[in-house]
Amino acid sequence: MYLFYSILLTFGFALLLPRFLFDALRHGKYAAGFRQRMGSLPSLSAGGAQKPVVWLHCVSVGETQAARPLARAVLEHFPAHALVVSTTTLTGQRVAREAFAGMAAEVFYFPFDWAWSVRRALRRVRPSAVLVMETELWPRFFRECRKADVRLAVVNGRISENSFRRYRLVRPFISRVLNDLDLAVMQSESDAERARLLGLVPDKVRVSGNIKFDFEIDAAEQTLTADLRRRFGFDDEGRPLIVAASTHAPEERIVLDAFRELRGAGAGRGPRLLVAPRHPERFAEVAALLDASGFAWARRSATPLPTDAQADVVLLDTVGELRAAYPLAELVFVGGSIAQVGGHNVMEPAASARCVVTGAHTSNFRAVVGAFLERDALLQLPPLAESEAAHVLAETFRNLLEDADRRRRVGQNARAVLDENRGATGRTIALLAPIFEARRESAGLRSARGRGLASDLRPPLP
Image: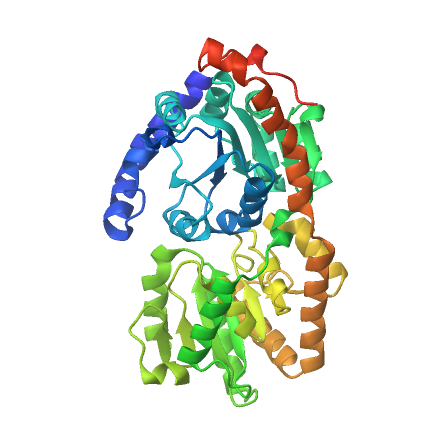
């Protein structure tokens, strides 16, 4: 089965190679860190480091930002360990280098999931434990970790309904992949049950809650918030700011049409809009859309101009700055939810007690959105045809902008839900402790036998 998986992976890589090359030339994707993706990773032992290494893998920006409290807790509770971080995406890599500065000994790209590239990566990093954020299943990587006697855990794990349906089609294989894990710390009991139904041994499954509830806006983000406020004049209370966050096509066009309708309705002195596309490779596309919109607009990445403070629309075409924009907003629309993507993180604007609006498609955050809706902490639009979405969104914005009490109440409720659900990081650390302790107990045996112990020599977790 693993041979078949490797053949499919190689065939898929060859089939998509022209697209990879196109994206590499046009957007810089995939080309960055290509040698690292082939397994040529930094070697901590080369610098004389003797600490056991914890490898934390985050796929992209959202997981990277969410992992910061966990990384701090790992280093606080297990100071004898060194931390390294990997990401899959280019944007995740950029954010990780900033987010884990001073914490991670190295930040690098995750290897391609071939046996030879994974083995090469493991030989270079020599981790004692690997923590994978949010159930990224890499069959060959999991298998090679097990063969090398590397403790392996999923943290903040989730399995969406869509993923569950796909995994069930290949359940025998997925069951083998999952059972290479030592531990799966899932966000909710629903996620845990899906893991068990896919064949993961029940004793390996635990529930911690969602560590994304545990983040706070740090000092660096507060400084960035102040910079955005000064440059773009976002302190004008007569011109409330609407933030359209993590948008996908066609959501930018829908939001701009809603914004045009809202301004035509004469809401106050005229609100302003900040648009933050989810993927950097779409920045130019959205800029062209703004050029054609007729609005006066400014670009965050451009040289500052005196006219920035009067712009109707600001394009946030940078990576890692969105959270700093939330405290400036009166309303936040979280994208990927009118487009059928599954939604994005509503907890980050909730930390600033902002009033959040989403579309109907939030399957990626079903439990979180449900908790917010139960407490009147979020407004969710019904399923909408693309042709009617702009009008409904404009009406929703208008009603909220005209009702300050309602807006504040929803934002305060959102912050309360966030506060009440904190603590998952601490619970996760407690669940991970046996992984680190068991590894220390087996260190003598490992050094006697060398790397690559058979899986039956792995001491059981308590």
